[in-house]
Length: 343
Image (cartoon, rainbow, N blue to C red; front, side, top):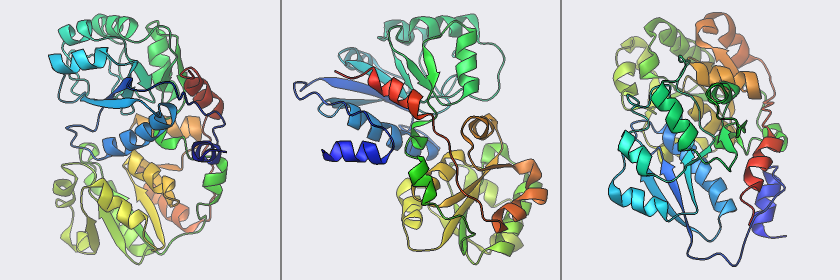
């Protein structure tokens, strides 16, 4: 069995797609981590690219931005690719004219070749998409390919505007959270904890309560700065609390260092993909739900989520209890999405 086969089998995905005759072809990845102010986008795209490399072993990858728009060069280069993947992130939106996540003009969308969605999600709970947005999704997404979204809400929103060739695969960050992987994640409380906050979902009272609970229950408390304004928000909190917290630099490699260390460590926090990264690294995680992403993923895939509004009642008990990580990834849908790229 090849190394690639072993890796996919270990991750719970039985299909391996490899075509030795394909060389010098390319795929385009619209990478939401380029120009981002949120390191969570790096977590998403890191995972997405790992899976794409398993699918497309010989192809060249062309990485283009969504946040920073696209030039004539980008459009021309993407048009030469076999596929154009839009990876992860809450990039889907009800009004693409004002969306900052997908910074393409109407002219850009008209010129670009059809796109393929990979584990994308809808940005917040929103009203029905505008006529312009509906036209884009119906005319600039590949019609002969099954698209992948990360939760049932995103699936429903696309279905309501006529995009039916789409399935819920969960986010690519979760595809490796198989039953065998989750069984290796400790059930009991660790000695130390790393937490996150979300500047654009600020709640000084609830987040202060979070830090109090963590200081009371863990030996060392680390704060990973995932977003560009998280530190400024953290500095607004009571200094008598924050002086007990150790800061971790706002880079993915810095976060990985602590996750990969020999320390006994839990994750608790409001940043969804920081929690998923911790689980990828075999750490017990408690994600605090502050928006539709964590809430929908809990509904669909049994992510370990406690609503931030309930932390005073539930969080301490959750920390002190022994609980298994029982993430339920939709392996059949993941395989179905991957299978269509078999050569």
